[in-house]
Length: 395
Image (cartoon, rainbow, N blue to C red; front, side, top):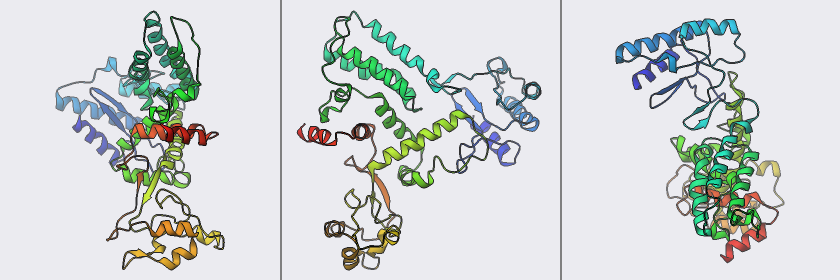
């Protein structure tokens, strides 16, 4: 399969194929492999179809195996006319399909209303709950079943997609109803759903909130797909102005499902990156007046400073690069007394290093799903921040 991948990549390099891009700066994708499945993505034309057919034939000759045409199929964009589709179909010798369906357990052919593609998750959870209806389960047993079985049913999809909020809320309702149910009856909901969905350390029961768990899992997946997590964090930190995942217009018109995933990634970046803070190296990449770089906080600029000029300050302007020490007078002139004291207490590396972002809510500075969930759970209800802080401190 590595040989087949190289053949396809070479064909794209010499302009015989043109893959798809989800954004202007994204890499081109021409194929994806998993086990014995292969998916090809390319701009359709007689030449590209002939190239694909030729590559598959030559690969079959070299490997001694042929593609099973009866189990393979092709889907065309709606912009391809029926007459042209028949021409391309005859070249590739694949039957056509209107829906690719599921791949590796998740829906990939998202057309129209997104909710309809994820309703099967609700049915699977309902089926499990009904099968337990006549079992006498303790609260401890229910908690284990919820987190290991009911949440596990959806976890594979939650790692891949930001599922629609209507589906997530319905799953939450089913799980909550199962928790309070008694002898097949609905049961009394003694406390609201948000309380039991808090982590145990914050006074909750540790029952996962599907929307929050979805975000925490999805960001972990994005981080794992990137070869350099610190670089990923740095790029996503500036998502509001120039997001790595959602920047510019696509060079080619991409399917709506790609655009939907890309938009959700952009929203997720803006939400999760609030939990990352800067570790100072050279200070050239950190805006001094608007970034979190002083013990995880943004310093307060003095009121007599020019707003336009202060917005362009970098931390490197406050550092004597020769002695690797703070410019004390500059720091005191530009920032409020308390912020200035905190800045001067920040340690600087002995040698000039690269600035990098780290996860502020974990001792090792690494993002984890558990710490991400706790962070996002606190963001969901901003109307009662004092209640959340008091609960966290108490427990």
